[in-house]
Length: 425
Ligand SMILES: Cc1cc2nc3c(=O)[nH]c(=O)nc-3n(C[C@H](O)[C@H](O)[C@H](O)COP(=O)(O)OP(=O)(O)OC[C@H]3O[C@@H](n4cnc5c(N)ncnc54)[C@H](O)[C@@H]3O)c2cc1C
Image 1: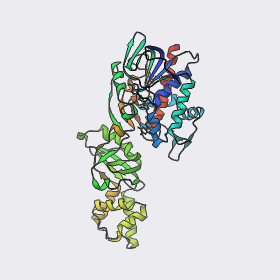
Image 2 (image 1 turned 120 degrees about the vertical axis):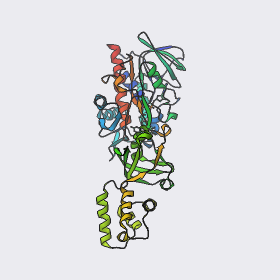
Image 3 (image 1 turned 45 degrees about the horizontal axis):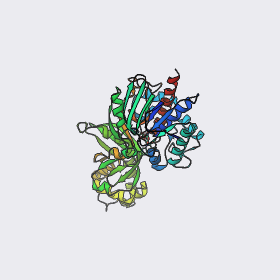
Image 4 (image 1 turned 90 degrees about the vertical axis):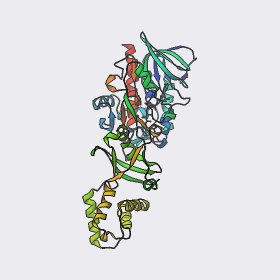
Protein backbone atom coordinates (compact mmCIF):
# COMPACT_ATOMS: atom_id res chain seq x y z
CA UNK A 1 0.00 0.00 0.00
CA UNK A 2 1.26 3.46 -0.79
CA UNK A 3 1.85 5.54 2.31
CA UNK A 4 0.40 9.00 1.82
CA UNK A 5 2.93 11.59 0.67
CA UNK A 6 2.41 14.28 3.28
CA UNK A 7 0.18 15.43 6.09
CA UNK A 8 -0.79 18.60 4.26
CA UNK A 9 -4.00 18.90 2.30
CA UNK A 10 -4.40 16.03 -0.13
CA UNK A 11 -7.04 15.65 -2.75
CA UNK A 12 -8.37 12.20 -3.56
CA UNK A 13 -11.24 10.59 -5.43
CA UNK A 14 -12.53 8.16 -2.80
CA UNK A 15 -11.75 8.38 0.91
CA UNK A 16 -12.62 5.32 3.00
CA UNK A 17 -12.78 6.18 6.69
CA UNK A 18 -11.94 3.18 8.89
CA UNK A 19 -9.68 0.30 7.85
CA UNK A 20 -11.56 -2.54 9.52
CA UNK A 21 -13.16 -5.40 7.58
CA UNK A 22 -15.72 -3.15 5.87
CA UNK A 23 -13.27 -0.36 5.03
CA UNK A 24 -10.59 -2.69 3.65
CA UNK A 25 -13.20 -4.39 1.49
CA UNK A 26 -14.62 -1.05 0.33
CA UNK A 27 -11.13 0.19 -0.66
CA UNK A 28 -10.42 -3.04 -2.58
CA UNK A 29 -13.79 -2.96 -4.35
CA UNK A 30 -13.32 0.70 -5.25
CA UNK A 31 -9.81 0.12 -6.63
CA UNK A 32 -10.92 -2.97 -8.59
CA UNK A 33 -13.83 -1.03 -10.05
CA UNK A 34 -11.45 1.68 -11.31
CA UNK A 35 -10.59 0.15 -14.68
CA UNK A 36 -8.65 3.28 -15.72
CA UNK A 37 -6.34 2.87 -12.69
CA UNK A 38 -6.19 6.62 -12.39
CA UNK A 39 -8.28 7.24 -9.28
CA UNK A 40 -6.74 8.05 -5.91
CA UNK A 41 -8.24 5.87 -3.22
CA UNK A 42 -7.35 6.79 0.35
CA UNK A 43 -7.93 4.49 3.32
CA UNK A 44 -7.69 6.20 6.72
CA UNK A 45 -7.63 4.81 10.22
CA UNK A 46 -7.20 6.11 13.73
CA UNK A 47 -5.03 3.27 14.87
CA UNK A 48 -1.32 2.80 14.14
CA UNK A 49 -2.05 -0.82 13.22
CA UNK A 50 -5.23 -1.65 11.34
CA UNK A 51 -7.63 -4.59 11.38
CA UNK A 52 -7.52 -5.29 15.13
CA UNK A 53 -10.94 -6.99 15.11
CA UNK A 54 -9.96 -9.30 12.27
CA UNK A 55 -6.98 -10.43 14.35
CA UNK A 56 -8.96 -11.14 17.55
CA UNK A 57 -12.09 -12.49 15.86
CA UNK A 58 -13.26 -16.08 16.22
CA UNK A 59 -10.72 -16.63 19.02
CA UNK A 60 -8.03 -15.31 16.60
CA UNK A 61 -9.16 -17.86 13.97
CA UNK A 62 -11.48 -15.37 12.18
CA UNK A 63 -14.84 -16.86 11.28
CA UNK A 64 -15.03 -15.23 7.84
CA UNK A 65 -18.54 -16.27 6.81
CA UNK A 66 -21.13 -19.03 7.08
CA UNK A 67 -22.38 -21.83 4.81
CA UNK A 68 -25.89 -20.39 4.99
CA UNK A 69 -26.48 -16.70 5.44
CA UNK A 70 -30.02 -15.37 5.36
CA UNK A 71 -31.69 -12.13 6.45
CA UNK A 72 -33.06 -13.98 9.49
CA UNK A 73 -29.49 -14.15 10.84
CA UNK A 74 -29.58 -10.37 11.30
CA UNK A 75 -31.43 -7.88 13.46
CA UNK A 76 -32.04 -4.18 13.05
CA UNK A 77 -32.55 -3.06 9.46
CA UNK A 78 -35.41 -4.63 7.48
CA UNK A 79 -34.83 -8.06 5.95
CA UNK A 80 -35.48 -6.94 2.35
CA UNK A 81 -32.55 -4.53 2.64
CA UNK A 82 -30.27 -7.19 4.12
CA UNK A 83 -31.37 -9.70 1.46
CA UNK A 84 -30.52 -7.28 -1.33
CA UNK A 85 -27.04 -6.65 0.03
CA UNK A 86 -26.35 -10.36 0.62
CA UNK A 87 -27.38 -11.07 -2.97
CA UNK A 88 -25.17 -8.28 -4.29
CA UNK A 89 -22.13 -9.90 -2.66
CA UNK A 90 -22.97 -13.37 -1.41
CA UNK A 91 -21.14 -15.81 0.88
CA UNK A 92 -20.16 -17.78 -2.28
CA UNK A 93 -18.59 -14.65 -3.73
CA UNK A 94 -16.89 -14.04 -0.39
CA UNK A 95 -15.32 -17.49 -0.49
CA UNK A 96 -14.19 -17.00 -4.09
CA UNK A 97 -12.77 -13.59 -3.24
CA UNK A 98 -10.72 -14.94 -0.35
CA UNK A 99 -9.54 -17.91 -2.40
CA UNK A 100 -8.46 -15.49 -5.11
CA UNK A 101 -6.40 -13.35 -2.68
CA UNK A 102 -4.73 -16.48 -1.32
CA UNK A 103 -6.96 -17.32 1.66
CA UNK A 104 -8.78 -20.61 1.04
CA UNK A 105 -11.50 -21.23 3.61
CA UNK A 106 -12.45 -24.42 5.37
CA UNK A 107 -15.98 -25.34 6.45
CA UNK A 108 -16.59 -26.61 9.97
CA UNK A 109 -19.52 -28.80 11.00
CA UNK A 110 -21.12 -25.77 12.65
CA UNK A 111 -21.45 -24.14 9.19
CA UNK A 112 -18.71 -21.62 9.97
CA UNK A 113 -15.93 -20.88 7.47
CA UNK A 114 -12.40 -20.20 8.72
CA UNK A 115 -9.16 -19.66 6.83
CA UNK A 116 -7.37 -22.99 6.40
CA UNK A 117 -4.51 -21.48 8.43
CA UNK A 118 -6.97 -20.89 11.32
CA UNK A 119 -5.47 -17.46 11.75
CA UNK A 120 -7.05 -14.02 11.42
CA UNK A 121 -3.57 -12.74 10.60
CA UNK A 122 -3.72 -14.53 7.23
CA UNK A 123 -6.99 -12.75 6.43
CA UNK A 124 -5.71 -9.31 7.42
CA UNK A 125 -2.39 -9.71 5.62
CA UNK A 126 -4.11 -10.84 2.41
CA UNK A 127 -6.53 -7.89 2.49
CA UNK A 128 -3.65 -5.47 3.07
CA UNK A 129 -1.61 -7.06 0.30
CA UNK A 130 -4.51 -6.73 -2.10
CA UNK A 131 -4.92 -3.05 -1.15
CA UNK A 132 -1.22 -2.53 -1.80
CA UNK A 133 -1.38 -4.34 -5.15
CA UNK A 134 -4.22 -2.09 -6.21
CA UNK A 135 -2.43 1.11 -5.17
CA UNK A 136 -4.74 2.04 -2.27
CA UNK A 137 -3.13 4.80 -0.16
CA UNK A 138 -3.18 3.91 3.53
CA UNK A 139 -2.88 6.55 6.23
CA UNK A 140 -2.82 5.34 9.80
CA UNK A 141 -2.99 7.38 13.03
CA UNK A 142 -5.53 9.65 11.35
CA UNK A 143 -8.70 10.10 13.34
CA UNK A 144 -11.28 11.91 11.28
CA UNK A 145 -13.40 14.17 13.46
CA UNK A 146 -15.24 16.24 10.90
CA UNK A 147 -16.49 15.84 7.34
CA UNK A 148 -18.13 18.74 5.53
CA UNK A 149 -19.58 18.75 2.06
CA UNK A 150 -18.40 21.80 0.16
CA UNK A 151 -19.81 21.91 -3.37
CA UNK A 152 -19.19 18.51 -4.93
CA UNK A 153 -16.27 17.63 -2.62
CA UNK A 154 -16.02 16.47 0.95
CA UNK A 155 -13.59 18.18 3.28
CA UNK A 156 -12.12 15.74 5.80
CA UNK A 157 -10.53 17.04 8.97
CA UNK A 158 -9.00 15.31 11.94
CA UNK A 159 -5.85 14.39 13.77
CA UNK A 160 -3.10 14.20 11.19
CA UNK A 161 -5.28 14.76 8.13
CA UNK A 162 -6.73 17.57 6.09
CA UNK A 163 -7.99 16.18 2.79
CA UNK A 164 -10.68 16.60 0.24
CA UNK A 165 -12.41 13.79 -1.59
CA UNK A 166 -15.06 13.41 -4.26
CA UNK A 167 -16.63 10.41 -2.52
CA UNK A 168 -16.53 9.19 1.08
CA UNK A 169 -17.19 5.70 2.46
CA UNK A 170 -17.86 5.80 6.20
CA UNK A 171 -16.77 2.46 7.67
CA UNK A 172 -15.88 3.49 11.21
CA UNK A 173 -17.62 0.59 12.96
CA UNK A 174 -19.71 1.02 16.09
CA UNK A 175 -18.81 1.11 19.78
CA UNK A 176 -17.81 -2.48 20.41
CA UNK A 177 -14.35 -3.33 21.75
CA UNK A 178 -13.28 0.35 21.82
CA UNK A 179 -9.60 -0.52 22.16
CA UNK A 180 -9.74 -1.70 18.53
CA UNK A 181 -10.39 1.90 17.43
CA UNK A 182 -14.18 2.10 17.17
CA UNK A 183 -15.26 4.97 19.39
CA UNK A 184 -18.52 6.14 17.81
CA UNK A 185 -17.06 9.21 16.02
CA UNK A 186 -18.53 7.90 12.79
CA UNK A 187 -22.06 8.27 14.19
CA UNK A 188 -21.42 11.95 14.98
CA UNK A 189 -19.99 12.55 11.52
CA UNK A 190 -23.01 10.88 9.90
CA UNK A 191 -25.37 12.92 12.08
CA UNK A 192 -23.59 16.12 11.03
CA UNK A 193 -24.30 15.07 7.43
CA UNK A 194 -28.05 14.77 8.03
CA UNK A 195 -28.44 11.23 9.39
CA UNK A 196 -30.29 10.04 12.45
CA UNK A 197 -29.16 7.30 14.82
CA UNK A 198 -31.04 4.25 16.03
CA UNK A 199 -30.00 4.18 19.72
CA UNK A 200 -27.11 1.79 20.12
CA UNK A 201 -26.59 -1.08 22.58
CA UNK A 202 -23.92 -3.69 23.10
CA UNK A 203 -24.63 -6.99 21.35
CA UNK A 204 -22.88 -10.38 21.43
CA UNK A 205 -21.65 -9.50 24.90
CA UNK A 206 -21.56 -11.69 28.05
CA UNK A 207 -24.43 -11.70 30.55
CA UNK A 208 -23.77 -10.63 34.14
CA UNK A 209 -25.04 -12.56 37.15
CA UNK A 210 -24.21 -12.08 40.85
CA UNK A 211 -25.41 -15.54 41.92
CA UNK A 212 -22.46 -17.25 43.58
CA UNK A 213 -23.72 -20.74 42.77
CA UNK A 214 -23.65 -20.07 39.03
CA UNK A 215 -20.38 -18.15 39.33
CA UNK A 216 -18.82 -21.14 41.10
CA UNK A 217 -19.26 -23.12 37.86
CA UNK A 218 -16.78 -20.83 36.05
CA UNK A 219 -15.06 -22.70 33.24
CA UNK A 220 -17.84 -25.24 32.61
CA UNK A 221 -19.46 -25.23 29.16
CA UNK A 222 -22.71 -27.01 28.26
CA UNK A 223 -25.01 -27.12 25.27
CA UNK A 224 -28.06 -25.08 26.34
CA UNK A 225 -31.03 -23.25 24.96
CA UNK A 226 -31.68 -19.78 26.39
CA UNK A 227 -35.08 -18.12 26.26
CA UNK A 228 -35.59 -14.38 26.49
CA UNK A 229 -38.90 -13.17 27.94
CA UNK A 230 -40.45 -9.72 28.20
CA UNK A 231 -43.57 -9.10 30.28
CA UNK A 232 -43.93 -12.86 30.74
CA UNK A 233 -43.90 -13.60 26.98
CA UNK A 234 -41.23 -15.58 25.20
CA UNK A 235 -39.64 -13.34 22.56
CA UNK A 236 -36.39 -14.94 21.45
CA UNK A 237 -34.27 -18.00 21.91
CA UNK A 238 -30.72 -19.09 21.20
CA UNK A 239 -29.24 -22.53 21.35
CA UNK A 240 -25.57 -23.29 21.44
CA UNK A 241 -22.74 -23.63 23.96
CA UNK A 242 -23.24 -21.82 27.26
CA UNK A 243 -20.11 -20.99 29.23
CA UNK A 244 -20.26 -20.31 32.98
CA UNK A 245 -17.85 -17.55 34.04
CA UNK A 246 -16.84 -15.85 37.29
CA UNK A 247 -19.07 -12.89 36.34
CA UNK A 248 -22.03 -14.70 34.78
CA UNK A 249 -22.52 -16.38 31.40
CA UNK A 250 -20.74 -16.30 28.07
CA UNK A 251 -20.40 -18.62 25.06
CA UNK A 252 -22.44 -18.31 21.85
CA UNK A 253 -25.78 -19.04 23.51
CA UNK A 254 -25.41 -16.17 26.03
CA UNK A 255 -23.79 -13.82 23.50
CA UNK A 256 -26.56 -14.33 20.95
CA UNK A 257 -29.35 -13.56 23.45
CA UNK A 258 -27.54 -10.57 25.03
CA UNK A 259 -28.69 -8.00 22.47
CA UNK A 260 -32.31 -8.51 23.53
CA UNK A 261 -31.48 -7.98 27.19
CA UNK A 262 -29.33 -4.92 26.35
CA UNK A 263 -32.13 -3.40 24.24
CA UNK A 264 -34.82 -4.09 26.83
CA UNK A 265 -35.74 -1.99 29.88
CA UNK A 266 -36.82 -2.69 33.46
CA UNK A 267 -40.46 -1.77 32.74
CA UNK A 268 -40.61 -4.68 30.24
CA UNK A 269 -39.46 -7.14 32.93
CA UNK A 270 -36.83 -8.96 30.89
CA UNK A 271 -36.04 -12.50 32.02
CA UNK A 272 -33.81 -15.29 30.73
CA UNK A 273 -34.45 -18.98 31.29
CA UNK A 274 -32.12 -21.87 30.47
CA UNK A 275 -32.90 -25.35 29.19
CA UNK A 276 -29.91 -27.50 30.00
CA UNK A 277 -31.29 -30.46 28.03
CA UNK A 278 -32.23 -28.76 24.76
CA UNK A 279 -33.13 -32.06 23.08
CA UNK A 280 -35.76 -32.86 25.73
CA UNK A 281 -38.87 -31.19 27.04
CA UNK A 282 -40.49 -31.33 30.49
CA UNK A 283 -42.60 -34.32 29.54
CA UNK A 284 -39.83 -36.42 28.04
CA UNK A 285 -37.58 -35.69 31.02
CA UNK A 286 -40.36 -36.74 33.40
CA UNK A 287 -40.69 -39.99 31.44
CA UNK A 288 -36.94 -40.59 31.72
CA UNK A 289 -37.05 -40.03 35.48
CA UNK A 290 -40.16 -42.24 35.84
CA UNK A 291 -38.53 -45.04 33.84
CA UNK A 292 -35.44 -44.82 36.05
CA UNK A 293 -37.65 -44.91 39.16
CA UNK A 294 -39.37 -48.05 37.83
CA UNK A 295 -36.03 -49.70 37.17
CA UNK A 296 -35.53 -49.35 40.93
CA UNK A 297 -31.78 -49.42 40.58
CA UNK A 298 -31.31 -47.43 43.75
CA UNK A 299 -28.99 -45.06 41.88
CA UNK A 300 -28.79 -41.67 43.54
CA UNK A 301 -30.03 -38.58 41.71
CA UNK A 302 -26.59 -37.00 41.36
CA UNK A 303 -24.94 -40.07 39.86
CA UNK A 304 -27.93 -40.68 37.57
CA UNK A 305 -27.86 -37.11 36.16
CA UNK A 306 -24.12 -37.31 35.58
CA UNK A 307 -24.23 -40.70 33.87
CA UNK A 308 -27.46 -40.30 31.89
CA UNK A 309 -26.78 -36.78 30.58
CA UNK A 310 -22.99 -36.47 30.85
CA UNK A 311 -23.37 -33.40 33.04
CA UNK A 312 -20.26 -32.28 34.96
CA UNK A 313 -20.41 -33.14 38.67
CA UNK A 314 -20.17 -29.51 39.89
CA UNK A 315 -23.08 -28.53 37.65
CA UNK A 316 -25.26 -31.36 38.97
CA UNK A 317 -24.45 -30.37 42.55
CA UNK A 318 -25.69 -26.81 41.90
CA UNK A 319 -28.87 -28.04 40.18
CA UNK A 320 -29.57 -30.37 43.11
CA UNK A 321 -28.92 -27.55 45.59
CA UNK A 322 -31.13 -25.06 43.74
CA UNK A 323 -34.02 -27.48 43.25
CA UNK A 324 -33.95 -28.51 46.92
CA UNK A 325 -33.56 -32.21 46.11
CA UNK A 326 -32.34 -34.45 48.91
CA UNK A 327 -29.14 -35.74 47.33
CA UNK A 328 -29.10 -38.87 49.43
CA UNK A 329 -32.25 -40.08 47.69
CA UNK A 330 -32.39 -42.40 44.76
CA UNK A 331 -34.38 -41.36 41.70
CA UNK A 332 -37.01 -43.93 42.71
CA UNK A 333 -37.47 -42.28 46.12
CA UNK A 334 -37.75 -38.70 44.87
CA UNK A 335 -40.81 -36.93 46.25
CA UNK A 336 -43.15 -35.48 43.60
CA UNK A 337 -42.41 -31.78 44.47
CA UNK A 338 -38.68 -32.53 44.33
CA UNK A 339 -39.06 -34.21 40.97
CA UNK A 340 -41.00 -31.19 39.64
CA UNK A 341 -38.35 -28.78 40.99
CA UNK A 342 -35.59 -30.83 39.41
CA UNK A 343 -37.38 -30.82 36.05
CA UNK A 344 -37.92 -27.06 36.34
CA UNK A 345 -34.26 -26.33 37.11
CA UNK A 346 -33.08 -28.46 34.23
CA UNK A 347 -35.68 -27.43 31.67
CA UNK A 348 -36.78 -23.91 32.54
CA UNK A 349 -34.19 -22.57 34.89
CA UNK A 350 -34.46 -18.86 35.75
CA UNK A 351 -31.08 -17.17 35.36
CA UNK A 352 -30.84 -14.11 37.64
CA UNK A 353 -29.26 -11.81 35.06
CA UNK A 354 -28.29 -8.36 36.33
CA UNK A 355 -27.12 -6.83 33.07
CA UNK A 356 -24.71 -7.23 30.17
CA UNK A 357 -20.95 -6.80 30.13
CA UNK A 358 -21.29 -3.88 27.70
CA UNK A 359 -19.31 -2.54 24.76
CA UNK A 360 -15.95 -3.39 26.34
CA UNK A 361 -16.54 -7.07 25.56
CA UNK A 362 -19.19 -6.76 22.84
CA UNK A 363 -18.43 -8.39 19.50
CA UNK A 364 -20.78 -6.01 17.75
CA UNK A 365 -23.00 -2.96 18.23
CA UNK A 366 -26.74 -3.07 17.69
CA UNK A 367 -28.37 0.14 16.46
CA UNK A 368 -26.56 2.71 14.34
CA UNK A 369 -27.34 4.54 11.11
CA UNK A 370 -30.80 3.42 9.94
CA UNK A 371 -30.65 1.62 6.61
CA UNK A 372 -33.85 3.40 5.60
CA UNK A 373 -31.58 6.44 5.09
CA UNK A 374 -29.34 4.47 2.69
CA UNK A 375 -29.99 3.30 -0.90
CA UNK A 376 -29.81 -0.49 -0.92
CA UNK A 377 -28.55 -0.75 -4.50
CA UNK A 378 -25.45 1.35 -3.76
CA UNK A 379 -25.13 1.95 0.02
CA UNK A 380 -25.20 5.67 -0.79
CA UNK A 381 -26.70 8.05 1.72
CA UNK A 382 -30.16 9.36 0.82
CA UNK A 383 -29.31 12.48 2.83
CA UNK A 384 -25.87 13.41 1.47
CA UNK A 385 -25.12 12.31 -2.09
CA UNK A 386 -21.58 11.04 -2.49
CA UNK A 387 -21.47 9.63 1.06
CA UNK A 388 -21.55 5.82 1.41
CA UNK A 389 -21.80 3.49 4.40
CA UNK A 390 -20.36 0.05 5.12
CA UNK A 391 -20.20 -2.36 8.05
CA UNK A 392 -21.09 -2.16 11.68
CA UNK A 393 -21.84 1.59 11.65
CA UNK A 394 -25.23 0.65 10.20
CA UNK A 395 -28.22 -0.51 12.20
CA UNK A 396 -27.73 -4.19 11.31
CA UNK A 397 -26.14 -6.74 13.63
CA UNK A 398 -25.76 -10.44 13.04
CA UNK A 399 -25.69 -13.41 15.32
CA UNK A 400 -22.55 -15.44 16.05
CA UNK A 401 -21.28 -17.51 13.12
CA UNK A 402 -19.50 -15.26 10.59
CA UNK A 403 -22.60 -13.17 9.85
CA UNK A 404 -21.11 -9.87 11.00
CA UNK A 405 -18.06 -10.21 8.80
CA UNK A 406 -20.32 -11.20 5.89
CA UNK A 407 -22.21 -7.95 6.44
CA UNK A 408 -18.89 -6.06 6.38
CA UNK A 409 -17.69 -7.82 3.17
CA UNK A 410 -21.05 -7.34 1.39
CA UNK A 411 -21.69 -3.72 2.34
CA UNK A 412 -18.01 -2.83 1.82
CA UNK A 413 -18.06 -4.27 -1.68
CA UNK A 414 -21.30 -2.56 -2.69
CA UNK A 415 -20.24 0.80 -1.21
CA UNK A 416 -16.72 0.78 -2.74
CA UNK A 417 -17.90 -0.30 -6.18
CA UNK A 418 -20.79 2.14 -6.24
CA UNK A 419 -18.65 5.08 -5.13
CA UNK A 420 -16.34 4.55 -8.12
CA UNK A 421 -19.18 3.80 -10.56
CA UNK A 422 -20.79 7.09 -9.61
CA UNK A 423 -17.60 8.96 -10.55
CA UNK A 424 -17.82 7.58 -14.07
CA UNK A 425 -21.50 8.45 -14.40
C1 LIG B 1 -13.69 -10.26 19.94
C2 LIG B 1 -14.47 -10.23 18.64
C3 LIG B 1 -14.61 -11.40 17.91
C4 LIG B 1 -15.34 -11.37 16.72
N1 LIG B 1 -15.42 -12.50 15.97
C5 LIG B 1 -16.12 -12.49 14.81
C6 LIG B 1 -16.12 -13.61 13.94
O1 LIG B 1 -15.40 -14.58 14.17
N2 LIG B 1 -16.92 -13.56 12.84
C7 LIG B 1 -17.67 -12.45 12.52
O2 LIG B 1 -18.38 -12.48 11.52
N3 LIG B 1 -17.62 -11.36 13.27
C8 LIG B 1 -16.85 -11.33 14.40
N4 LIG B 1 -16.77 -10.19 15.14
C9 LIG B 1 -17.47 -8.99 14.66
C10 LIG B 1 -16.65 -8.33 13.54
O3 LIG B 1 -15.32 -8.19 13.99
C11 LIG B 1 -17.25 -6.96 13.21
O4 LIG B 1 -18.58 -7.12 12.83
C12 LIG B 1 -16.48 -6.30 12.07
O5 LIG B 1 -15.12 -6.21 12.40
C13 LIG B 1 -17.03 -4.92 11.77
O6 LIG B 1 -16.23 -4.37 10.78
P1 LIG B 1 -16.22 -2.80 10.50
O7 LIG B 1 -15.14 -2.59 9.52
O8 LIG B 1 -17.58 -2.32 10.22
O9 LIG B 1 -15.81 -2.14 11.91
P2 LIG B 1 -14.44 -2.25 12.72
O10 LIG B 1 -13.81 -3.56 12.52
O11 LIG B 1 -14.76 -1.80 14.09
O12 LIG B 1 -13.50 -1.19 12.01
C14 LIG B 1 -13.71 0.19 12.14
C15 LIG B 1 -12.38 0.89 11.91
O13 LIG B 1 -12.61 2.30 11.84
C16 LIG B 1 -11.60 2.97 12.54
N5 LIG B 1 -12.15 4.25 12.96
C17 LIG B 1 -13.16 4.48 13.83
N6 LIG B 1 -13.42 5.78 13.93
C18 LIG B 1 -12.54 6.41 13.09
C19 LIG B 1 -12.32 7.76 12.76
N7 LIG B 1 -13.04 8.76 13.29
N8 LIG B 1 -11.33 8.06 11.87
C20 LIG B 1 -10.57 7.07 11.30
N9 LIG B 1 -10.75 5.77 11.59
C21 LIG B 1 -11.73 5.44 12.48
C22 LIG B 1 -11.24 2.04 13.69
O14 LIG B 1 -9.95 2.28 14.17
C23 LIG B 1 -11.39 0.67 13.04
O15 LIG B 1 -10.17 0.22 12.50
C24 LIG B 1 -15.99 -10.17 16.30
C25 LIG B 1 -15.81 -9.00 17.04
C26 LIG B 1 -15.03 -9.01 18.19
C27 LIG B 1 -14.86 -7.72 18.95
